[in-house]
Image (cartoon, rainbow, N blue to C red; front, side, top):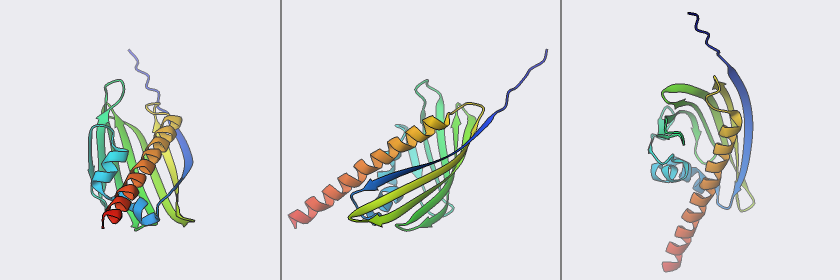
Length: 162
């Protein structure tokens, strides 16, 4: 009996941009605070964040098909209110699906922040498709906007009470 294993790697790079109606410090804080990050990034499972250079982030959940899903990142470079660089792996059902490097840049713009996220990834053996990753990343950047807006509204309400 001969077993043939097909091994493929698909490489991709994509860049997403968003503009948030808050200063870079607030957008950065939503990324750095474990509770805030779990709200907008979470998979509906567990989330842990050690936000420092050399620190790790792990989000675990399930795919729509019921397989275990784990997204693990290591932060390599953090410049407060300006930049993040991290590498990540995604495993599905215990099998490595992707390896990526992501850079997030925050730039003050008018009355807000422009976020530019660039991801370079290797997608292994068809376990995940580049278009799925780009869509999912865009979705959580949209949820980040909601998190930032809610934090801004809460601060304004506190200031109005004082």
